[in-house]
Image: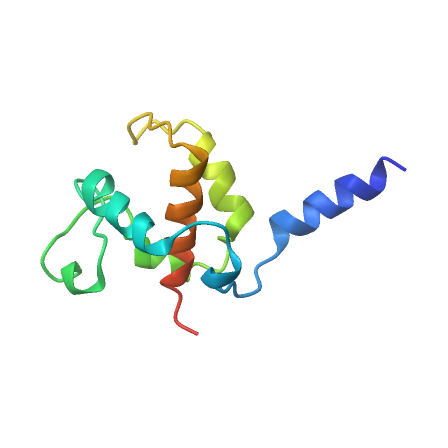
Length: 108
């Protein structure tokens, strides 16, 4: 019976179906504000900035449009240390907000 929870978890990680940000916890507007304040130093945050800034870090638009990213994979990303990123400790609410915002950038 332990196999069933493992399979369910694997299905969540592999789910690449389009997500509707309204179905996610969090406030995408608050997520955008967080990204503007904290993330914009390294990532371009808004589509209109794409031609103005060249950053080595991926844009959030690129992250959103990558079909490998879903809610679960982004949650794992935010709690995993990365050598090229500052060690940010987001609250659960901040994480929900940023994920909701990132996934709202997807073009349907």
